[in-house]
Image 1 (cartoon, rainbow, N blue to C red):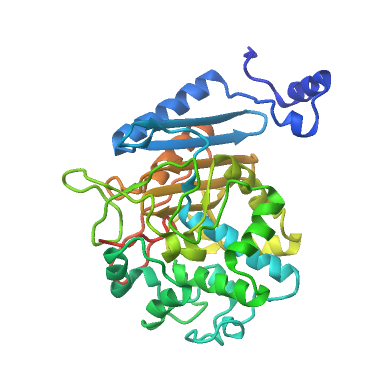
Image 2: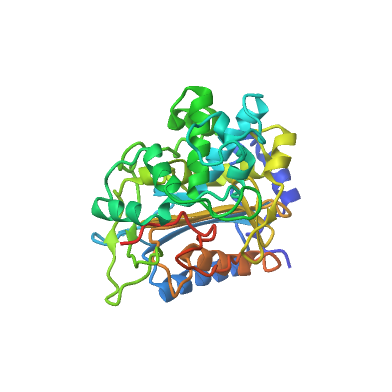
Length: 407
């Protein structure tokens, strides 16, 4: 039986012709999921929120020929009880890496840099900078120490989460440690890599990174709700973000369940690796463009999607992009916020999840829990489930987060 609320792709096309809607007008025609699927998604999200104590969530699922799901749950501000809405801005953490690396790859297409150029050609003072390539920075195989695991940096951040860090300050913390391994011999997630790529972009273009990304990455796709902040301010309207910390570097619930509002903590410490702010609509636009290489040549896009093994089961990593369960994209986490931004090329499906908390539930990232719950409903053969990597004082976190500072 054909349900009236489900409009097959061919029928939808006929309706557009019949009504005279084309181009931008056609994009306003919304194709809903089967009511049973919508009900199952509602339950998957609300059950996960209740289980993990999540204050608020925005979820978007778009699958051509099947339907659209855009909903907000919970609250955007715990103090006032203001409900979450789908149009609110949030900090997206390591999803920033997809933008920064795209900016670099555009320079590759222009012949201004080469993926196998040594980073020392562009940035001075990098240990083994004559042997670490831009490719190894982008695919997390440089061996450089992750500055967010440096004790001195952590203490500095704890003392004042609203202070501004310069990129060179971050690198100084990283370079105070020996490399973890020779370049190209292993995979290890490190924000130091992407900060260096941001500096390469600035050196080659003569522009500030925020200006370059706005002009060359955000503007061509009309990502008007996406920004690279230079201070702690959040653009209106926005959701407040809540966090709690342990010394492990992961945000976990305190014994009393207490959290703090981290909305206006300065994201300069994450810079090219995690400072970007965005919203649901823009990430819905960005993910298909990221997956199909819309801002790059086919040859360079092929290099980006050359996924290699990582130290985490079932996770592969390309140039600033990961692949898990057939889904490609990235996730992000920094104090107060988590993001999941993915595309499933086999179905041209897009999934965006925005959470206004980074307080892990029993060691599990909230965005991963929600991503697993949602994909179990809509793409049961392609479930997103990012394993939790073992953590130690010597090991770096998995790509499940832009590593958050410990308090």
